Length: 257
Length: 174
Image 1 (tube, one colour):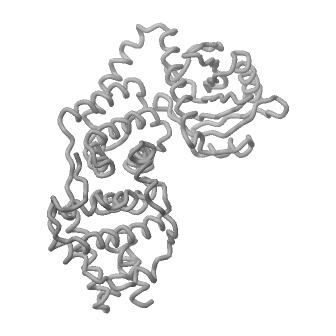
Image 2: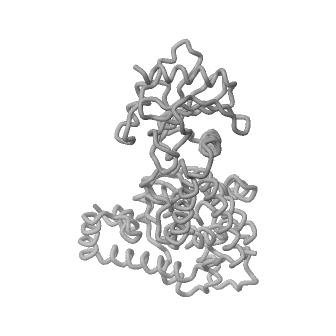
């Protein structure tokens, strides 16, 4: 390799992008090549000089406060937002304390209120999915492609219905977290109406409680939820309640097989 | 809040306007909160939230204008021969003798797709992989575009190494 060909490696070396073995190879070359050693030194110095010279803009205290309020409001509405990182520890502690309070007072809440909250969260997730440029992570109309994609990602498995001649079309799916529990979100389409199906493990508080099926409405969306074989299913969409119910029937049938 | 100060700094460099930068950061956090379910646990959160900020900027009026003014044609990922060209002026010596304000202005005058690369790599010290996720471009393109960005910065400084703050055409962040 001549010096021109080493230049690419020098840039990677200076930017810390070389694997240990690659870095050793570059260093071995630098020991024997004065031109490349000088080039690497120049690049290193330039990088440091630029970092020292470039201004760092600092946010004002007012703006900091404004964003904190935005995040607090958002976290109340989207409680699954819990990115990791030490900077979050105070907020996480506050969130945990808030969660303890919520859990403690949950016994006083009516089942109706809990269901409405669970539904509001799932509707938010459905809306966010529709607004996304990449709504699903596994894009396929084939249930035999979508279902295996979740293998190893979820602590449970589920069946998907045969949709031939039903009018419904499977668009794909992705992994989601509902109340900190992993679940599957599947996207279906019926006459341009897109519907989300959320499947999570059945446990108190993760979605509609109760053993019976429930049909609810939230912000114009129709929803139907039920428990089956240890899993909780929720179908949400802007299609009519009858269409939502028909998809629920197909899913129930598949789940019982 | 994670990466708040860094995101604000990056937003200032992108928008070159503090008010616009505040709007951009606020919108970024709102989108991050709303779309957190799309974040894959175990992947890089910093790259994810920078990507939201950058995409939000690119769809803003200022971002569309900035992105529309440049061409990414002939962005070849295999740049070894070009990288081997002799540097006419040692970059560090050039940077050492120009004034801090001149470096600021040269960075501000870089096309946004070059400026963001240098900011993420040299100021934020992101890895190529992180930059690749944040900017939604392949790692090979990160490397080639980074090299072009540094070359463009060097050219800016070589053209006007001692320009006074009042004499340049650069726009200071308002």
